Image 1 (cartoon, helix red, strand yellow):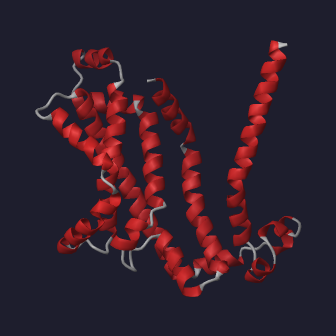
Image 2 (spheres, helix red, strand yellow):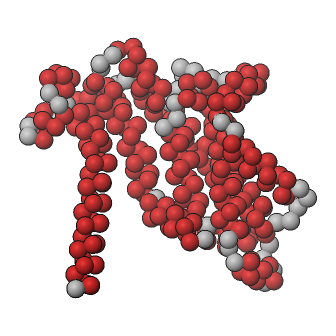
Image 3 (cartoon, one colour):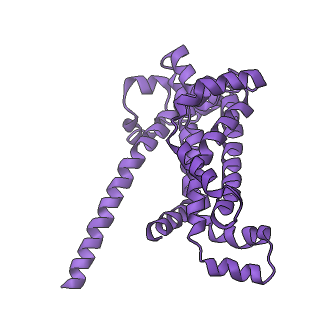
Length: 279
């Protein structure tokens, strides 16, 4: 009886998770079908009618998207912003997290308290002062300026996260590596980074999704030549209203990239979440 109850309980949980997954994927499927339908079909009926009439689907909208220079440039701008902003945050946070966790240097605790205090500073507070500073430095309206802003505001949480994760590593393991003659750099690259891979992967996913989907920072710090896909989509809606043949494939492209990144690193992400739950 206990085995039957456990089996029924697992079946109910699995069915519930399947339903949640289908509900979560429904907007993505709807956007995909909308991006494959003509503007006339989209105006006359809902996207779900394509399930019964697959003849409505074609790649004409994506052909139009590839000819839209503004959307293509915005996509590459998003890549040029998201990848460096994610890479820099992960690299700097990993180095700083290891230093705060295992290296003794003057002022370590006060500096770390400052990092923790920066977690409560809202992004909106720094928009105007940083915009003025970037204007004086010639970074306002440029991709490097947007990247630097994301790096600056992503580092406090990243350092806090990785420092706490690295600090939970067994002290004996690092002491044994030092006794064997390992330098701090060798210990960091050969021991700490492999062990901390789940936390680093989780951080990279969070940072990438935040930067890729950002519009607030880009609206202020990016000009027309450096604006990402989120701003370009908003601009297309404002200028043309219902040009669904460009907006739908552009929105799907903006959505499918972070989804693909998440599924590519989901194994490490789950490991990081599970490790954090038991430490």
